[in-house]
Image 1 (cartoon, rainbow, N blue to C red):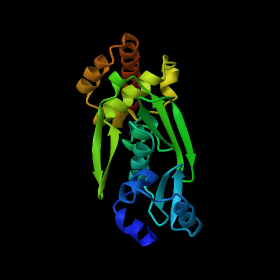
Image 2 (cartoon, rainbow, N blue to C red; image 1 turned 135 degrees about the vertical axis):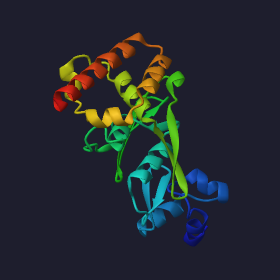
Image 3 (cartoon, rainbow, N blue to C red; image 1 turned 135 degrees about the horizontal axis):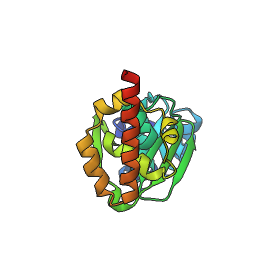
Image 4 (cartoon, rainbow, N blue to C red; image 1 turned 60 degrees about the vertical axis):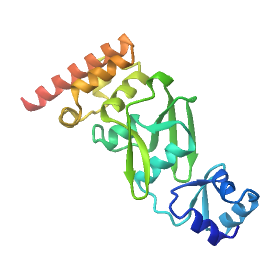
Length: 211
């Protein structure tokens, strides 16, 4: 395979793998990838995953890459909360949920962090289209619950205060009925109690701010 063939075959791909290439050309040798990296045509993301060097990297691209390099996974936790403007934007890695073990990748494009959840709780995400591709991201309500579920140390008002949630945006964006239905799907009483304390804290803060 020549580079021009690679470019044509994967022109609509955000990220492609050695496995993808071998589906097009079974006898493809990985040394060509090293040659194309040396020439600046492509860039390695992690082992066996690549992007074209001129690919414009934005938030949506990072979300799709996150989905692709560690499956199954969907974007959630701090990244989703920031995306929904529920917390400040100072999120320096793409955080996701997976049924596989907790793991992280440190790449030239940024850090990709994955937290583990039970397969029974791997739900509550949407498939978001962009350009010619898609990525999976938690619904706002699920992102909140994923965060509370995995951060069991959060108990007091001072703990919740440190999260710097935007109370007004929270009550605008979050469907409270859906949030409570979703919380019961986790079948964990401690999470339901933690959520109740969290909601009371946010309500109190909103009342104080509007006083």
